[in-house]
Length: 329
Image 1 (cartoon, rainbow, N blue to C red):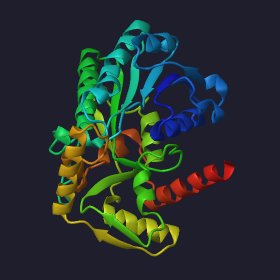
Image 2 (image 1 turned 90 degrees about the vertical axis):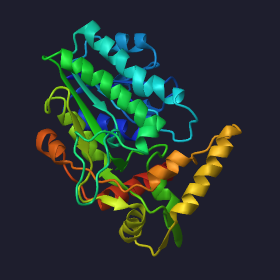
Image 3 (image 1 turned 90 degrees about the horizontal axis):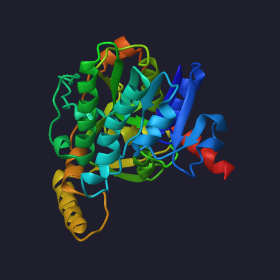
Image 4 (image 1 turned 120 degrees about the vertical axis):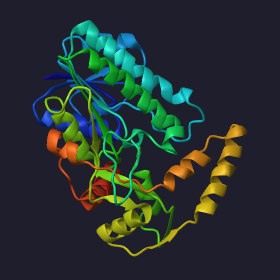
C-alpha cells in the first residue's frame, strides 16, 4: 500500500516507518520544516508540512491507500489542556476529513493504554475498561481519549472502513531520538543509587507495537482498539531499574520513594506552575507514578499478531542504539 505516515520523527513513528518499508509498503512521511528525518531515510519518502493544518493532510493524502497516525503531544510539563488538544484530538477530525475527501478507507491510529482503566495484578484490564483516575484527570490521556472517540464514532458510520486503534503501553527501544520514554532509563543508568516511585508501568518493546500497527493495516476489526503491552513486563519502576542494571552489567541500589514525599513534590510543582514555571512536577503527574498498571494484551496478540520481545532486549537495544548515535557525532 501507499501509506501516509504522521508522527514519523517520534520513537514509535521511526519504528513504524522501518516496519512499513521492511514489509514492502510505499511511505509518505510528513515532517516539520527543518526535520532531519531525511538524513536517516530515503529523501523521496519525506515531505514537509504542518499536520495541524487540515490542508496539509488533504494535500498529501491524495493517492494514498491508508493513513497511519503516530503523532502525539506527550510532554508532561505542559500546563493546560489546550496544548494537547490540537494534535491529540483535533488532528483526528482532520484525518477523517482527508479520508472522506480521497476515499481512503484504512487508518491505524496510535493512542495510549492510559485511556483504558488500569487493572490489578490479579485481574488485568482489557479494552472494555473505562478510563480511571488519575489518568482521567490527565490532559494527555484525556486528549487522546477524545481523539479515539472521534475516530471510533466515524468508524461506526462506515461498515466498509478498516479503522483500528492501538493502545501502547510504555514503549522502550531503539530510534528514541529525543530521547522520549528512554529518559526514564537514563535517569538511573549506571548510577550507584537510583530513586523510584512505588508505582509501575506496562512496558513494551516499541518494535512490537510497530509490528502490531503495520499488521493492523490488514488485520483487526473496524472501530476496535487493541492493548499493546508485554504481559511479562508489567513492572514497578524499581523492578525496571533492577532489570536495566542486570542487563547492562552494573551494580545499583534502588530506593523507593514514599508516597507522601511524591505528593509533597507534586504540590510544590503545582505552585511552580501557578507562577508560570514549566515543570513536569504536578499532583496529577506524581499520582500516575504511584499507580501499578496491569493490562491484558491477548487481543493484540491474537488479532494483530503482535510479538512479545523480552523487555531486557528493548533496554539493551535502546542503549546500544544511543551509544552508536553518540559515536557518530
